[in-house]
Length: 498
Picture 1 (cartoon, rainbow, N blue to C red):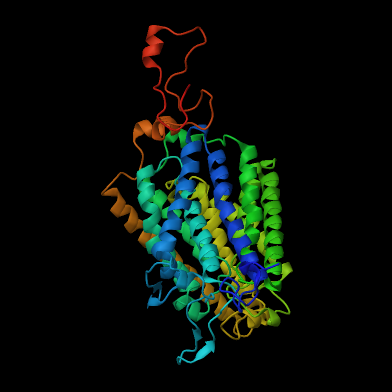
Picture 2: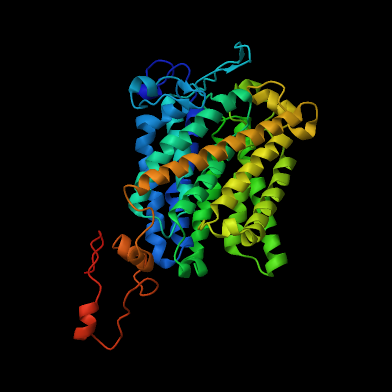
């Protein structure tokens, strides 16, 4: 029987001589796992962790962002993040849609690593994958960054303003961080370590979320005073998708199904579990009872903290991988203890005593769970990056963490300076974007929308129940002319009252 073209190894355009099917399969699975973190993971989590009247709006903000990023990514943003250099922190905008580009062998990052005199220190990485797999994988990262940012703005941002904010922030903020740290930009050349997005994704989304929350303004006083989750069990379902999806988040970053990927996944779960237990322990000690939402926060901070140092940013030859990860298993556990305690302290103590943070309504505390935890992970990587493992995987030779002496302190300095750039850029650019949008549409919803919620904003509700946000509660004694005249109009959404 004739063998189908797709299965003819090294004999057809579909199976090139450089293609490693195992690596490509793992890359596609990893990208899909990361995508599942956003859709349905964060869609479910956001729709469940807010008050009933904001369930639809919160879920829709995540859904819209996921879709909008895809179109922007393949049209111009991928090459701004990983393409040819325009300036030291930005790539040239162009589409990633043509077959010539997508079916060729991947090259990431798009530049080699150079010594200060311009000679090559480490050659450009070329995984055994097509560019299409890399574009897919990196798009899922870009999408979840914007979705995470949305957590700071739930319950009051004008949905039209959000629709404009997503492409603008992706274009002028995310692409800069991605190119600077991953795409061959100046922070990459300097040797700042960000394995899988501690800075590019989490620090940037946390700072941008806090900045945008300041400009949009707070929720209503009643929402800030009482904002109970409408379904705690579904919050856990969304959190579970987020946790398990992180296997693709960190496990796919080596661009190969190698030992580095295995160790990165293991370190990820060790750190997340340790952080969750630490956060829960602190809740029990100080508040006398464990909080389910607190456990989810602790899980999140652990996942974020391990991201910069679970393994390595760059692809490496599988034949060289005799060990893996940038931090060892014990360091992952130490990072979990830190991520379960320091963000807990900033959220539960510092936030409540610092008027500056009190005045900014960061709905889900994204600043603490992502910005603080992301910086903590980057700094901890600067301390615990093991010299032998760095030599195997990092493009900058002689890299080592601060606890290993010699020039280790320099790596910590690099991590802090790199974080400073990400913080400053996101604060300034997010402010500029909000300033531009407010000239076109209000950043904040109207008072009627804030009072009623989903029914006023979308004409839809999450649950067929009377309750929070309704303007009228009909009695059980039957209709009368006065009540009928005040009955809410039939929704104009897809689901009609029949």
